[in-house]
Length: 339
Image (cartoon, rainbow, N blue to C red):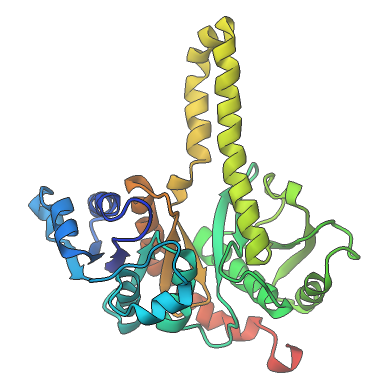
């Protein structure tokens, strides 16, 4: 299997991206990786790697890259030799089974639509993130692909999220909820209310109604559906609260001698807790609704997170994630007359 990695994307490309690719090849013997970007910088990053691994790393030259602050659609259209666009073109042509980037989120979404293309029947793609909640993994969708949503977008996110959890995570009957400002049916604006009505009528989705923000960290749903703005705010809050809790605990321990003495007994538990909520474990989020495996990695990804993102992409390809969505989406989505 060949995966295309945007080696220039993210805060630490290409050095950390290349290290992550090297480790992914060591971890997954069936994996070859196309490193797309600056030939000289990539070559230097992989120069000392062992021959058996180096033979599975293929450099694809790209003279341009897309920065985090560029206009997404304009950049993906104008920079035809950018590392991100070339990686996506490899997916479209079939040269690569999927692509991974830690770069500009908007450009990844734009490239997914303009270069890879949408699955027939999907109005807008959605980025889904698996959150490590208290009770079970929860998919939050969308977290930034579609900022302003129509009811049909939320309805389709629910369908794709349900399919993802069913086929990729192994949840037999995913419980799907809409994020709202209350659990009562009268809550939510017009978009949320219309999306709710669509999902109530969709017998193929196990729709459980609304969920409030305070219920998400406890895992009260398998899939939480929202617009990209709300989802991104919730995701960043989730990450920030996890880091805050660990820092508060550390600060309190530093103030107390007995707590410092007892820390030796709690250290294994604290390491497990930190590991559980570390975004680098999950690595990447799938852009659902496009006609290929497109994985968005965290912009701050270092080597371990890139390795994880490549693992997510590999798993998505091996489990035929795109094909499964395409096979079932026609029956699960409402017809044009319902939209």
